[in-house]
Image 1 (cartoon, rainbow, N blue to C red):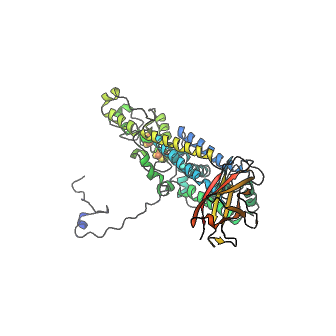
Image 2: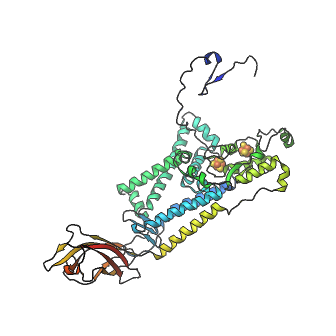
Image 3: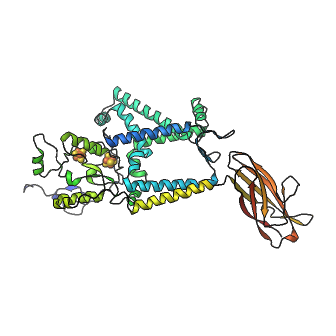
Amino acid sequence: MPSDAPIVTRRPDHATVPPDQAAGPAPSPAPASAYAPHRKIHPKAVRGRYRRVKTLLGVVLLALFAVIPWLRWDRGPGLPDQAVLFDLGSQRFYIFALQLWPQHVYYITGVMILAAIGLFLATALGGRVWCGFTCPQTVWTDLFVWVERRVEGDRGDRIRLDRHPWTAGWLAKKTVKHAAWLAVSLVTGFLGIAYLTDAPTLAADLLRFDAPALAAGSVLFVAACTYAMAGFMREQMCFYVCPWPRIQAAMLDEDSLVVTYQEWRGEGRAPLRKSEGWDTRTDKGYGDCIDCGQCVQVCPTGIDIRDGIQMECIGCGLCVDACNDVMARIGRPGDLIRFDTLTAQAAKAAATIQPAKATAAPPPRYRLIRPRTIVYGLMLVVVGGLMAIALALRSSNDISVLRDRAPLFVTLNDGRIQNAYTIKIANMSLVDRHYRLTLAGLPQASLSLSGDGTEAGTLSLSARANAVETYRIQVRVPQAALTESSTPVTVTLTPDTGDGQPVRHDSVFLAP
Ligand code: SF4
Ligand code: SF4
């Protein structure tokens, strides 16, 4: 610094002021904004291994999402024939041959637990592979960026277009892009709701503008979310909405594969001059990074992976492709940015500082099997096994018994005590069934259906396939046979037909 250069003083808010103004009480610093200004990201197109994997996975996942609602599965007359249907109205989930009732809610809980453990395992093995390759936010954002690129061009064209004053050409491109985005969003909204209702019927109703308001509103809501999240919010969903980036830190260890910049090889970075050979660069202390910025320009979250592992990195590997392309063009070995473990990174860096150690101890190999992955793997096997057993042994019948509370009991003319119960029989099979209903705990009890005076020790009831039938029954017991004012009883429902297992429900019989 020249001796006559003014000396500057930095205030806490980093405002730079000349020294003559630095004396005396400093004015209150302006309050810092709680919000970072939004910086629009224009990811550049890239070719390479991870781009191909992302594209392939995206196409497969989008195709599955689009095709599944149209698959049919014959369940018999009166039942929906959509292979995968989450019918919220009738509270049934149909997944091919599997049918889940509200009674089976624990399977859904189990599936969510399995998905969470699977995500933990995938993160421990490969970092944020879910975020980078298969998360719906990533897949739809990729699709929207692809549309944007087809209409407005690659990164440079899009940046220029955004800075361009409004012209007819500008307006035409923006209109085409947003129309295409809206079309994709509406199709997504329709397909999303098609999982909740019969897809062909919904399609026909929507085309006739005759869909129920709830269905049409739901389609529009999902479409609006898709348009906003994949068209505008994009990486902000990952930064500010999704909790996973915060949670994943606990899932990673130093042996997890994450996207890393091989700093020990890349630094110091400096642009490549044609006149300069690699030996000259090396002598000047420069590494393989030519500071071209390609890894930053292709990044969908706009970060610089050379700054180290960051929460914003979704592990998509596009910067690996971009840098490998640059390395190939300048004749240097690839993988300056690569999926690697922190353990391997530290060993390579140490070997670079002390080359003698490099030959004595080669970089550690990736450890697939380690305590964390073993625990997650075991949890997957145990929870998956328990769910499979529970699914195989689940009953296709269910009974609920609700005792009348007003009155609690009735004393009949003949001196017997009567309690009334409402019985609900859920026949979760695809065939009509007949049942025998018995009562244990009251040896002298007689049962009768409400409205039918016939009394017997057991009752014959029936339930239609895939339906809940409601019966009201009366139980009568001689007062002399009752020793307590409250006697525990067990109602047992045994299927006479079909292969269902007996089901039981405990209740009480009340007396004076
Ligand atoms: S793409 Fe490679 S060479 Fe270019 S700035 Fe990134 S790390 Fe350096
Ligand atoms: S830094 Fe690389 S891996 Fe991470 S999000 Fe950006 S492009 Fe993807």
